Image 1: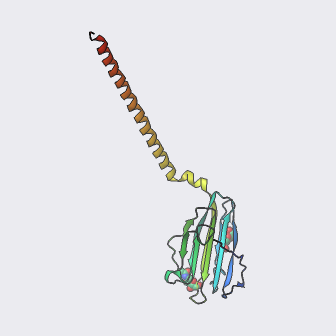
Image 2: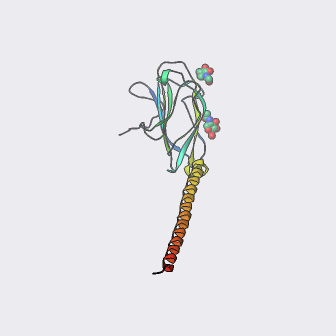
Image 3: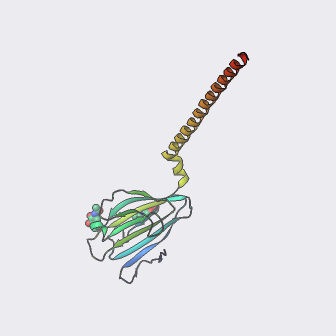
Length: 196
Ligand SMILES: *[C@@H]1O[C@H](CO)[C@@H](O)[C@H](O)[C@H]1NC(C)=O
Ligand SMILES: *[C@@H]1O[C@H](CO)[C@@H](O)[C@H](O)[C@H]1NC(C)=O
């Protein structure tokens, strides 16, 4: 699937009369916090608007973190009017990790699986004025997370369990074989002692 992304320049109107904005945003590999705000923030955002940003960290082994600090978008059923959306990857078919309007988002911390994210901010030509959003984002090395991840210790427990089962099986087999050879020896001794 081909996703054509245009480098939007603020002030350019598309064919449907929407003001377009957005950019390709390099995410600092040092983990510095960067911010992303709606147009004119903290003043009310313009209408209609169609913005998209592609955030990329140069380190392929990193993931992106998002912290929403302020959120105020005009509410509509299913956010069919104004919305703010974060995709877990660089394409429109990437899974959506955040899609919201209104004032109280269900969460304010999000992170991607990979080193890229696509962000949409869209407003309709009519609706109540709202101040928009202010969000911070930063890149984080994935290895740092894996070391702290409790799943890592669970894996160790499982491996230790499997190892213990093997050792147990080995000990039991050894005991069984020893017993068997003793019995055979006993039998042989008995046989040799019997008169022929
Ligand atoms: C954005 O980031 C800069 C530098 O980190 C900071 O000074 C500024 O207050 C931030 N917030 C907004 C809304 O621009
Ligand atoms: C949202 O923005 C509108 C317009 O600026 C303002 O009147 C309202 O108080 C804001 N609401 C919140 C919760 O910030």
